[in-house]
Length: 439
Image: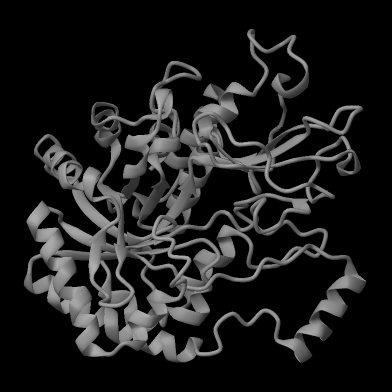
């Protein structure tokens, strides 16, 4: 890592003075559910405090939305009634850091009301005032500096990478079936979102509160966000440009989850990369300094089968959905950075076999797509795994990309999946540190 960091530092120093004109944001997401995990996965405020040395903003997740009244409410009252205060008190030690409360994210999952955020947009001014009033009350009562909108809007439907014949057939089929249209009223919802956020911003400003927005992975910006009209409604916008493919959405094939640039081969979709997503916002008049690039501290892991091959070169065919959950994440197909690091060859696991055998890392020497690691399935068709991830080195490459594009900074998602205990190399929060160094 030292040699790579040296090269990146020389690259950063070679940038024109304008690139250094403004201090970059380092927006740190904190999922409060991590406080409830067991063992080494439990992120205590004392562990969190070390990471806050590097953060310009802390976004506390998550609050939810009541589907009938459209009020903002705590998703875990037993935790939040004390934890809000405990976290906000850390501002005294870091007076330049702002603490926002995020609404939605992937925590506010309501199976009975999956479209409740669209319902809020459709509800009209009177019901939307319930959202505004309850949000301001919750923020003021608990000492937050602002609100972050991470609305659960309909996501793009997952698509496979097809050969040329398959791609032609898919386009032909789409004309007649419209099978990728997930919101027929998207244009109306876009107008409603614009008006709603304008009213929300005005109300928050009167209460001396800030507003930000987080674009969740696979939410189509062209459907819901009228960029020229909403850009001034937010202090900043976090663009979570990762999880383009996941084992849940794409169980039968594995690929890079957050490439910087579009891989040119195999008919990949042109928008499944950071460059496309960032350029869309910039080309639609969003000031670059308002955009924070989202970087994940976790990887996505697929289960390889005997038909997935041995090379691991993506696109990996005939995978079998999510790999088993890690001890920390407890989510199938998702591995935190320390869980991934522990699977790399080391003195402890060098002789292990089966499900504990080390993975083989493949480094992206072009610095365009990201790293991956794998363990092919054994003779019995078991224990195969393929992981796409950003390690501290590649996170630093993305931080340098942020500088080159003149973006506002980085949104790290999230602190609880970084190596906050230093289990891998002894360095605590290594991904956070790498990003801060190159910002």
